[in-house]
Length: 587
Ligand code: 6R9
Image (cartoon, rainbow, N blue to C red; front, side, top):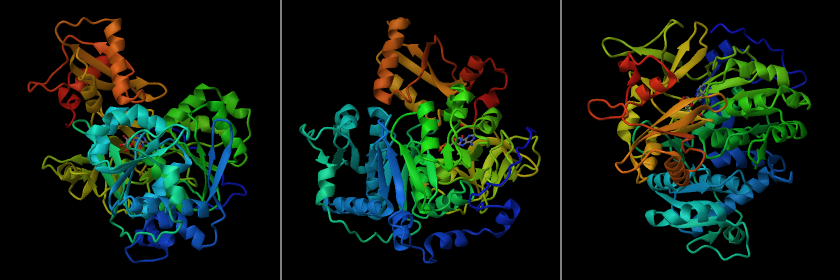
């Protein structure tokens, strides 16, 4: 735990850090001030779209570049803040013309394309709820989420529609409209769809922003649990206050700076820090439409003169694997701050940053439920490689244990592992799990929100990640529910029972491994393995389907017949099986 701290010099010639003295920032920070710094008002109304885009136009920065999209052929498309506003207003009008009422759910199933920004901001302008879905999902997880979210409008591409949505459309009676980004305008539209570009072209270009209140739901993100369906996490419009404040305090992002968040919009980071937070800061965003490629990424960092970069451990480890020389072949004089999120950032990855870029990666911790970064290594502070950092100003975070009397109490010693607990009261905290108040209530006890992550906390308040309290898998930064994968596997006629665990993977952190028991009459073998794997990929999408399938004669079960994933994992990893009370976890 006592990895050597990386001391840092200030950023020569760069802007001063927003947070220079941690202790003082904790003493003086208030969410009321953070709100005022964003909106300039104290009344409890605000709208994310107005605070991220409209505000800069009102302040005379409409001509500033808001986003630059880079495509496969290195063509760049730039949108100014003013253009973003015009497009989002048009989309808000499209929703009204289609008869969509305020508060309805609008989902996107899109890659990192300009239309994503139009639809996301337009939906928020209109006071509707944005749900950005992961475009690598297959039809099954999409169906579950579109149903759970009562989604009325889906915006997707023609290709995604044909491949993933057309086949489940009958199961989505609440889905009123599907709007398509067209690949080929000469082809006929699939039945039951509308052309997004045509609707935007006909729509009026001005819109009066919906007067949403702080607590009105703005965003719906799906996250995974151990059992049952995914959880629909609702975040309020006030989330922008915390996303803005942390984009400044943690990402140290200044107006006009070039910023690159590599997260996909289908996960919470891609919306909170790939769109809302940095736009609220008045930054200039880089969006790469392509998938990961080391040379491409270095070229983007160098040519675009990226100043602040927010990425993830899996990507960093892939860059490390491609070799330090590749990074060193380029110069990154503009790059002044690098941060990471989503999975444990190993100490080697932090220090590799120094080797390759002359500066460490700054780990940050948060969750869909917290809506914004909660624990972080700050730009102006020394970095302890392997530590997630300290609680942000405005948030009290501890690790807690349960006393014999059943109460939660903070642990004072770094020697003891406990669960991360946060005192509620920050503006981006989730307002509920959709239609699951019991699960929401269960996340709170004794005045704490319990995050479901295990950690140690040292005397200076640095958090060191240990693991999760549940069986949820984090692979390449994506939160994956074992239950959802098991359910999909069990729809194959040969599969009687399935159990899914995460196994260590040097790059992705964890990889998904499935164990299956066969029905009578089926024989284990390579043929069947690839059939079941193909079936899982078709239903789930390759990004979340198991990487490995093993046949099992008898999966370990509790007396009540529940599969013991923890025991399975202990056996797989060669860990002691003895203490089954801990292996069982707290399902
Ligand atoms: C933002 C995001 C949340 C879970 C979280 C934890 C893991 C996130 C981490 C980290 C170790 C970090 N996690 N950041 N683990 N170190 N710096 O990722 O949200 O998809 O909801 O996942 O991810 O387990 O509880 P989400």
